[in-house]
Length: 197
Image (cartoon, rainbow, N blue to C red; front, side, top):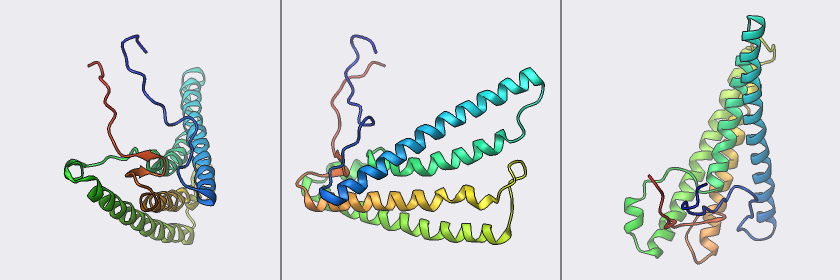
């Protein structure tokens, strides 16, 4: 960072849930598991890709299983990442109408948005489970690694369920607190900082 750049608050280091008691403990455990899955997934994907490139240049042929490993890791990172983004209030928001509403209206709207999104996530979780069941019944396997393909899609219902739980907890946080929260630990608002273009 340069001397003139503003200090940006990093909310990704240690996560502290804004929920009380048992709910806060569950939230923090899920947050740690997601952070580990994302970090390990990205590191393994980078190592796998680098090893494949080196093998291609040194031995003239890449690793035959590299593409399948990256496919598995992309699915893991995607579905672990949706819960992570919800927990840190990082999903894209279309907030022109929302910003024009008074604070009490924002709170009501945020509770509705969180509950509706939670229902949608659980709906997707339900249908992704049946998609995996269909894949399991077909018995397809990955050609290089040789295990059943349905295993790599297990992360879809898990990710949807965790995201649904996170949005449900956000609705609870908004019910029980005076401020408006984008997630259990992120208060709604904008940072007033100048950035260099």
